[in-house]
Image 1 (cartoon, rainbow, N blue to C red):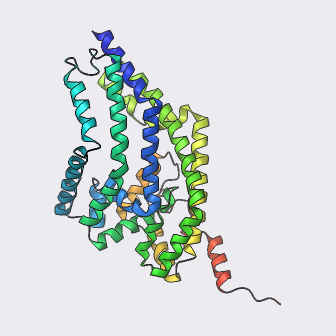
Image 2: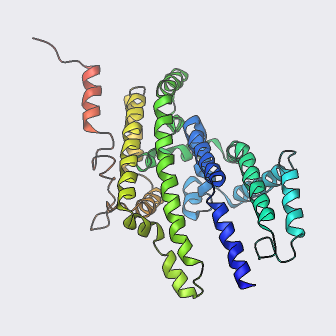
Image 3: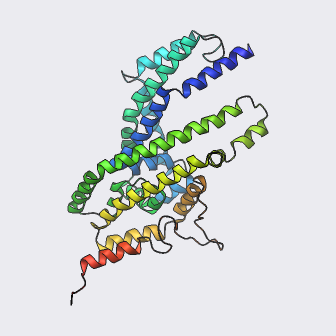
Length: 347
């Protein structure tokens, strides 16, 4: 019985690493990146972070608002499960589980049954992803005030140095005019092909890392000691990076390429901003609220970034890898901006 169970687990792991599942994972990541690019990034980020007490307090979300959002998300999930393109898939999955007394992956199910169940999972996941991000965006915008939504975008601006993907709509927090919004839309269209190239490269590297991570996870299946399992999962992603230096280097190169594109996009968009808007943006980056500082520290730790957001005395400082310390907008850009505005007189 134990051998049969292990064989079933082996099949399950193989299916989880199948081309179909990898493509589903890639599609999900691509949809999220496209959502950031097309303006839903702030809302998705807000939805993902509303579980964090500091974040909720930082943007002023009340307990009542949080409960409404949670209720809307539960209703959204139920609505999607009852959708005509989803419900038949779920019903077939339930039937396969009920017809297998020992459990679908407990050793009694045939390989064909397990394979069919997995195919249904992948298909259902793909269909649900098509509408999830749009619905999540609606939940956020319908339940937060305009002031809170502005703070969400301000949060994105404060965090822009930490992400290789920029959501152009975050600049709306700077009170853009209609003419400025049209200019930003034009910049997005101009840079769309380059964004897509960077996105595909990022996904390639992420899938490689995910594959290496699965290799590590294979080692834990036969470990039953709880303390040993806990030690195994501590700093797991860091262990994978150290064990695969070539991949780690490729990840760093990808991040630098992404930041290069992000900077190109930012500088074009900065040209659209007034001096007052530039000053406001600089304040958000140089002097973010405490909850933002804490979030940045967590992200840098997860990414294995040795450049701590605090110095030896515990004082906040901007990330030197993204922006020059104390100078949220690169000096070179500011000099070029000033020169375009007031060109040097020729002799």
